[in-house]
Length: 75
Image (cartoon, rainbow, N blue to C red; front, top):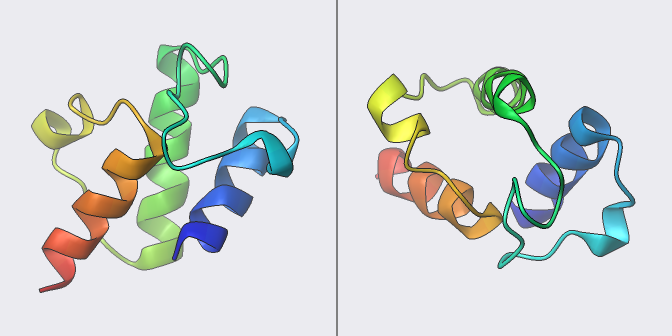
């Protein structure tokens, strides 16, 4: 799952895939602004065929937050 998320983030944020780690902060480390964050959430929703609630989306700050959220809703 991490590799799929990493690929999406690299494409959406135009960053080197090798710089993306689970602890990477979307805004501080990867340079995502609010528009990037929305586009990233939409891309993840499409890739994993899920819907991420807006309230939950605002809590996603790191790559690990995305992984944890997807694992939680998959159960």
